[in-house]
Amino acid sequence: MNKRIDMQLWLLCLALGLPAVPAMAEPLSTQDREAINRLSTARGHSSEEVNQLLNQVSRAGERGLPTEPLANKVKEGLAKGVEPSRIDPVLKQMVGNFESAREVLQESVAKGMVDQDQGNRQRAMESLAEAFGRGATADEVRDLARSGQQQGQRMSQDMLGGGAKSLAVIKEAMIPSKDGAAVVAEGMRQGFRPSELADLAREIKRHGQDFREGRITTESIRDQISRGERGDRLFRDQDHSGSGGGDRGGDRMDRGRDSDRGDRSDRGGGRDDRGGRSDGGGGGGSGRD
Image (cartoon, rainbow, N blue to C red; front, side):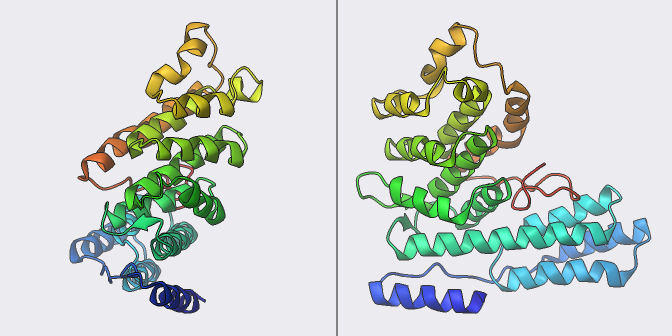
């Protein structure tokens, strides 16, 4: 199945005269392998159980998927005393999300919507995988790539990843995907940085009850963005009136999960997050930390 998809994408790139995103192998590092083995020995797990996890990470790396977040998920689970049999399905879900992320990223590059020379491919894949783990779908992200282009210019890989993750956060506020995507796409067209998209999504989620009860509409936020408004100015009227208290618990959770990472994405420095509980998914996995 994956080989057939890769071949179709390669043929599309060839027909359009566009370069394909290379799927460079990323082997499991010796340090990660040794750390996992030490943890498994300390917890008394058999080598067969842990080798299944190691082999799964290694095979993902051979297909060009990021191995570090997968290895970190294994280490985190073992350190918390989670049985390898419970880590295995979480790892498989993370791998599936990374494969979907790679497929969407390759398609977007092949169709001229994303510039593979801008941004960090691995960080973008991690953001996309987290978005899928948190409820965004591949088709929604494809639509976002089409609608979020700024005056026909190709967007960076990080921009697509940040936009996808922001859409997933907005969906968590039970706002219809189409409405949330329209707001995110407008922000992308207006040149919002990934960190600004993340802030926008958190604010929308924080005011989720206001949106659901009709005190704020996505159309009004989108219109303000189109006029050049940014950041907390978008919600200043609601905050001054004392509304927006419906989803503050979720907002606090997202601040710990996203805000610092969005800033790092803009600086082009650190890596994206490595996920949450091993028995409940995480970044690039099921997305519920």
